[in-house]
Length: 174
Image 1 (cartoon, helix red, strand yellow):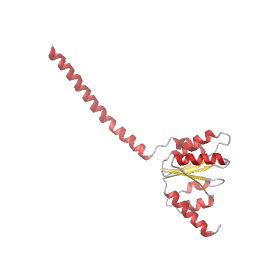
Image 2 (cartoon, one colour):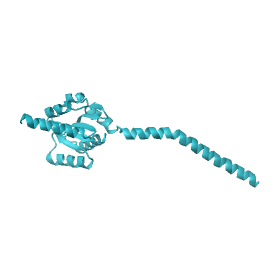
Image 3 (tube, one colour):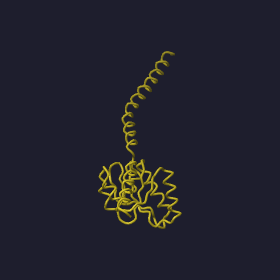
Image 4 (cartoon, helix red, strand yellow):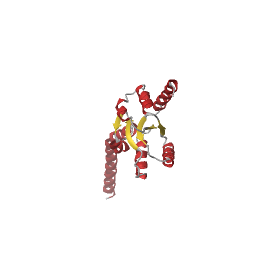
């Protein structure tokens, strides 16, 4: 491959990675063509972009990015596939479900992920990534927690008013 071609591919990888919020590196080697096609179909359904790239080209693309992906460099060996998504946990859920459905080879295997500005290295991080909450979900929970005491006070005042009204009405009838 010519140096100019490599440069174009690296720029294309950088552009693609930059257009998504979350990056997963997985090993899908050993899947047959039917399993790979099924994985690609499932990725398309969940708005996950699946790419297979050479490790050296991926590393050069990551080195040229604005974010610090240096923690991911150590896993760039063997077969590497990129899963890109705007949803933080969808690729992790897909990897977990697909590997359970294919217990013979247990692929895909999570190598690393860069989610919510943090690096997760190793297959043992898969459960953590499956349970991760997005920024929007966390903000929603915080707002709910902040509103909860006010709602409790308002409901207590309203129920107390109804109780007092009922007692006064009963007393007036006597």
